[in-house]
Image 1 (tube, helix red, strand yellow):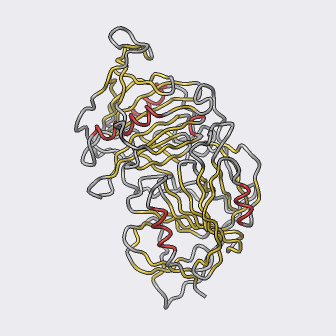
Image 2 (cartoon, rainbow, N blue to C red; image 1 turned 180 degrees about the vertical axis):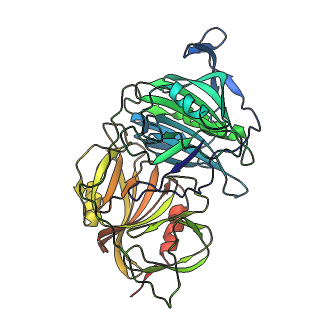
Image 3 (cartoon, rainbow, N blue to C red; image 1 turned 30 degrees about the vertical axis):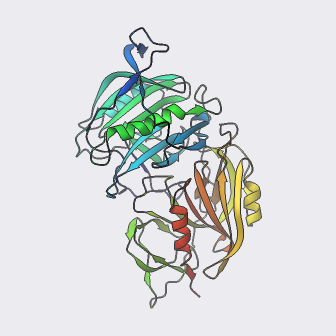
Length: 458
């Protein structure tokens, strides 16, 4: 399984197409599976899709492991836990836990749980057979039954092994976003993966793990998946009924962003290229409106770098929703949303920091508010986290989308910590710098340290 978010000026997330593959190349070991007897025949078999399968349980993390608990309105509302040694990111109705290459070679393996409702081309998905047809349509791909099944949210999912030549190009098969919304985050369960699929009233439920190669053992990845499965619980109706269709969250009127500062030809090198690593040094950045400089150390990548939007992340970032430092201008409002995205409230206009904080109603934890000098510009800084005790469901969302006049949508996620610097008098209206990462991740501090070098040019 591999994942990316497509490049779009109006995407809630944007990622480089050169992002490292998340799931590896070949099977190195077979995970030990424990048989579940409850609800099975005397030999632990069940019928799934008319086929007799062995009902198994993928082992979770050791009971002594201190897990981090998250809530999300994905899949109709869920609560789950993740080993703090692993990396989490979410998009739409999909949750991905990834394992970083211990050698630091920017390679990843991952486990995921999600709800599939549309193809990469925006066509509806309603059956397991449709997903299997999409997989087998990939050149060189072979899909075979494992003869096993697992239980997720009360549904039995049939297991399949997916194999393809290592040289097979990426094929983006399905979307992480809900049917009806732009399919801007795409998944491909190739070249090699173990995939469990089952039909629900809301769509096709999928649980998948990579086939590990040089990153980590398949046991480690299946422990990550087992932890997701064993801790996953519905906080709303889950997938027991159809979920609302997705929707575009663009403002009624979209204007092109013209935010662009002047670059001093005698100053530091201009960082103008998008989607490229940043070598250590001091650079000018002009696409936030007023030009500013930053002193970069090693390990940074610039992603979108266009008028009105700059996104920085770490070289070992694994995918959409993993970690970001976002600079954007022209904010107009905030909308309560559920995955899809689906607007579940009226837009709330925002100009001041008070407007933003008041708009984030619900189970919000706000700390550390203070007025700060940001390299010569005044900003209000505060930290935002959506409480782990929040009840996230399709009826009670705990995600919030910030919209700009250029059509950019940047969301606050219940699985992340956010540090916001709000600037009222930005280039095209209110501007925001936001660092986000999963709980207890050091990226927030690293982003704050980078911003301490920020200097706006006269």
